[in-house]
Image (cartoon, rainbow, N blue to C red; front, side, top):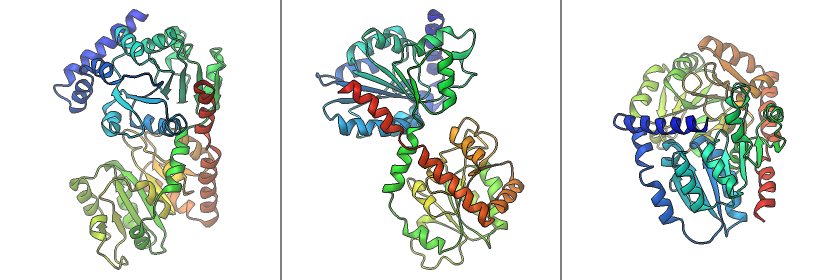
Length: 413
């Protein structure tokens, strides 16, 4: 089976190479790995103990970020090596100041894994969420490096739990400890006789909570709100706009709305403006406005502000779930507001399922469904209950970072 796995890795590498001639992301993927091992061997020198943290992409990086920053603070004599599988993680965070070395992860071939691990010799390896690489884990185990999985989630439909999944189960047996997000994952690991696991939760709660505590006010948003009820729309896509536009038009006398598009392009912002029957203004132009009474919609045409905008809303709508997948709802939940999102692609997000079940979040199929659920949640007692649910859900899930750090302290000290 190991032979077939390695053949599959080589085949995947070849497919990306061919795709790089036609696809910009594949091109970054291939170019970023060119001579990567030589670069690593040249740049990583010295005797300082090294901690290796691996993330697939940007979302997983955000889960690892609280751990990285704690490690950097508590173990200043250690070096942090951060690797990414995907360009969407590496290209955004390649200059991240809290890591000493940042690279693409070389393909998981036996020779790559051996060269990489034998050179960097990490004192501990931390893999985030779904990262389980056969050859790297074998090489780490060979030099007795502890391998930790954090913020991981397991489901019965994964290969580890299939009758024919012994090869993939063997990867799990190389890990020293699993810090998983939920009790279901603990039970599944116990079925494989893996007891070195605990439900620590998701480190994103700690990360987002910290952002909320440190976040600065946005005076213009507060001025736009002007004491009225406000809906904050985060990461809005085309499909979300199809549902939101008629809702906004119908409720213009009840709600003000702030819309933060997923991608800041003139074309999409113009589409938002033309789809609305109410008066809107872009954030960049609103700076010079003294009176917002005539404006019902504020369109955010910059990046980096969304997590701070949710504090001004009574309601939130988080985009993406009609398409590729729901975006981060924890930023909104931290402010204790009811959350709406599409009903097509949210199921793999633990927090979305939990908040729906508890009554703090609501999946909506279309405009009619959004209107119905909004009217239901706008009843004062329902609104207060939903606010309490989201607020308490975040509070009860804080602390994953400290639980993981307690374990890492026993290794690193």
